Amino acid sequence: MKLERITNQSKDFEAALDLFWGTWGSEDNRTFYGDCMRNASGDDVPRFYVMKDDEKLIGMVALLRNELVSRQDLTPWLACLVVDPDYRGQGIGFKMMEEMCREAASLGYEYVHLSTDLEGYYEKAGWTYFEECYGLGGGKTKVYRSPRLNG
Image 1: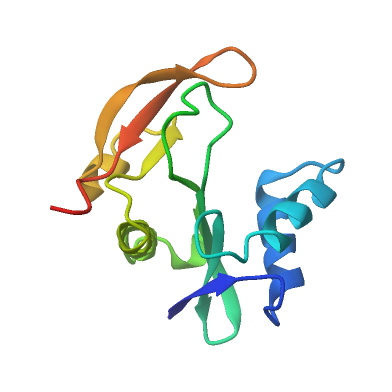
Image 2: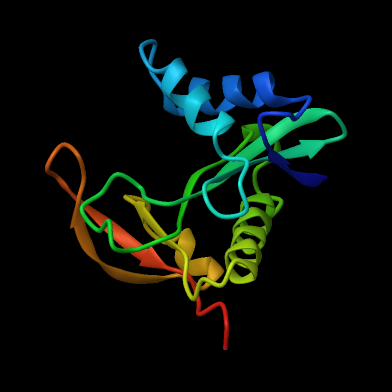
């Protein structure tokens, strides 16, 4: 299995776009996802990745500048983490989180953040509850922080 960064020049770009949009999007926002992913080819965040088993896309994850929550001062954010149900229970999600933390560290970031309503999953990977913030709909969401990346 291999984690592969998706850029606008990736041979799997359209398949990756379909995976991200199909999992997280709605019928009205494929263009939004496509534009985000096409413009994520620079040296900093945002970055989009797929996990591949040979040529099959079995997971995805992104490292984003923000998570569309009220804490716009925090960056980067781990987002869109999903593993194909047939591949769950093998630690693939944890491997993707570790790789995103290595990427963020290489870019000079001290922490990675995420927002979630899940209980217990991210704590198993060493992430800690940071605080609550507010989403676009006004509701509260939990923010977690990775272990310290540099130092």
